[in-house]
Amino acid sequence: MINIIESLDKLLESRVRLGIMSVLTVNESVDFNSLKQMLNVTDGNLASHISALEKAKYIKIKKKIIEKKTNTTYTISEQGKKAFLKHLEGLEKLINNK
Image 1 (cartoon, rainbow, N blue to C red):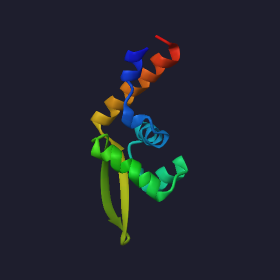
Image 2: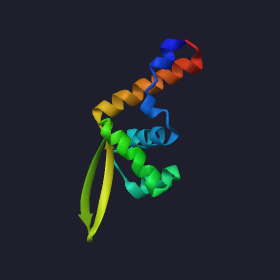
Image 3: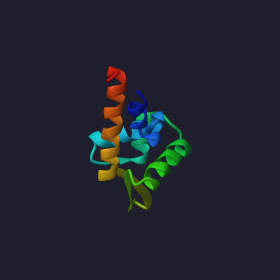
């Protein structure tokens, strides 16, 4: 059991970070406002979790100007995808008690 728990990614224990990674796994890219709506979180809350994921290189951020407004989109990195899948495998093992 200890090995299973150790295989879980501490960074992905947060429900918001897990939600961000889940959304980005099934979407090519997602903008800030869409993520905020999907996860039902505040701007500040989302920004802090995104910052943590970016620092770990789990996500990539792209900013562009659309009609004089900044549009920020997020994609999952290869490193992030691997970490997320490994975390999910660990959760499955924990649930199945293997």
